[in-house]
Length: 113
Length: 112
Image: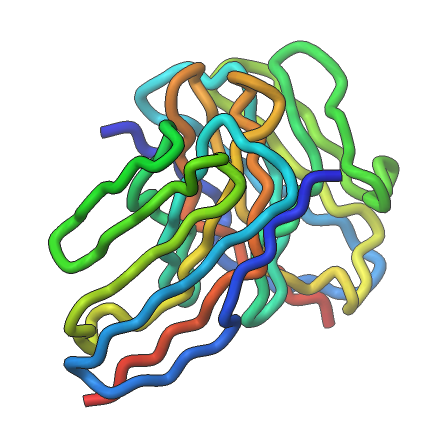
């Protein structure tokens, strides 16, 4: 079946630095990719919707200048956390939608020290 | 704003017991999905319910979609330790866009 990968799976960075997370759909073309963040023992919170070749749509309360999303192709979307702070530490999950079903990536654990 | 209220949020039971998780909304959804998530991994789709009143079974798991398509339930019969995990309901919004709204999740612990 379809598989979505994320890279890296874990990342530790220092406060003030930027981190890029990649989300790839491995065997299908994703018209839309979604980015979520998840705090411990909580549900997934949708951050933004990313469509190939267009600007991402951010959910209310999500800073678009802090969480930069690029969807350059139908198989790759990236999320860059700029000037990361400890409160940005979280589990970031992407999903890819190809028109019929949605598949989730394995997540990226970001720790900002 | 469409919201999904999921309950209970935490559940700890003994192996062999039955349980039900509820997902309720004041909004109508075209379809609703149930996911299971293990720690440190992405959620995995269990089922999609589409038709009001629909019942779907997946081994010991029974999923029901309310007649009005505003609520859903997940019933697990004779829970096993392998059922431990986070269960999430998600409503499909915005037509065929793939956009989902998640409930708060239910953390299930099944003790041996």
